[in-house]
Amino acid sequence: MLNRRWWDAAVIAASLMVVVALIVGLGGASTAGDRLLAAGALVVLLLAYVLVARPALGAPRTWSLPVFVALSAAALAIGCSGEPFFAVMQAIAYPMAWLLAERRRDAVIGSIVVALGVFAGFAVFSGVLDDADAVVPALTSAAATAGFGLAFAVAFGLWITRIVEYGEERARLVGELTAAQAEIEVLSRDRGASMERERLARDIHDTLAQTLAGLTILTERAGKQLREGRTDAASDTITTVERLSRDALAEARAIVSRTAAVPSDTALADAVDRLVDRFRAEVGLTIDLDLRLDPAGGIPRETQLIVLRCLQEALSNVRKHAAATRVQVTVSTAADGGATLEVADDGTGFDAAARRNGFGLDGMSDRVAIAGGELELDSGVGRGTTVTVRLPAHVDAEETA
Image 1: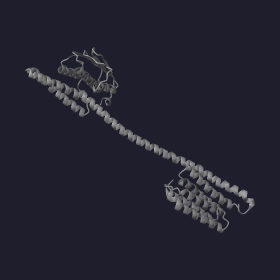
Image 2: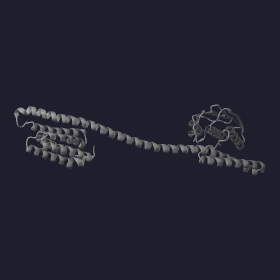
Image 3: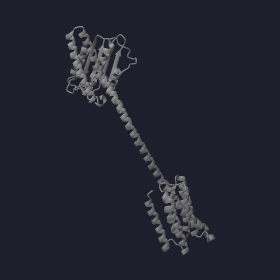
Image 4: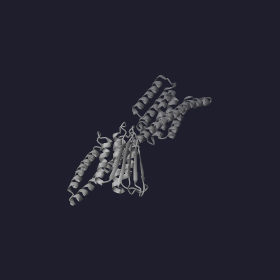
């Protein structure tokens, strides 16, 4: 509606209709003076459009509405008093009043002023000034004509205004939604980065940190054995160090490539055996292993990874804190792909309700919870510790990433 070219065309078309009516006497103008008066009014209205209304389209000024309404009302009063067909210019005056108004109230008041101009012009043309007997009919006719135009203009203006406001509100909401989506994307990226940091922290703790801790213990043992002259035992220990070093290198590469540190062609039983053997060599504990693997169950790679990580963490806690002499490790799987891990020691135990620091049991609990499983911790001072991990049949790869 704010395209000036369309309004230029509308103004030209309405003006041409008035000019034709004046030339052929279509509206009933009785004298050349009346036609000249109507022509002058048309010039005033055109000047009001060109100098006041048109420049303000799309960027109304506070003075644009009152000036245009005053000039157009005067022009309609003069023009309609000489040529009734001049009332066609209402089609320009009313819309311009609504376009130039910044508020609905201003638009309605402007429409009323325009209607008063039409009313005055029709009243004069109907003879309200010439014949006392014609006053009432003239005023009635003029009021009906002006009132009908005003009612239509206000109703149509309010309807169009609501449509425009609805469009603006919708555009505002779309803008807010777009901004919210952009903010969500930023938060999602931040959350993804935070989750990635947590994943790396868990993986480093569950793999490299544990292996490096084992290497430290083994190298200290090898040094002690050499100082004591036990070269054969030291050689065996160094061989274990070499194997663990290669494992650490493989684990580091796995973390960098974001792949599980469990070869896809390695069975869960073999991986558990290797892990238990390693801790036996590192700590010298008696570790009893009970594997209850269902031959019909295909254990997903992600489930294998969680079982091994939890077993690694549980054995590491036994080595660090339990002062145990014997550990029982039980791994069982179901036909549907679910798995259960239980690690029980005869160590000193601890208060399970006490606050814990580090990534140990808390990290294990987070890893299991993310995968949809559950972790149970049964421990008490002086009666050892039992850690039980239960994993569901299906674990998403994204959850263990």
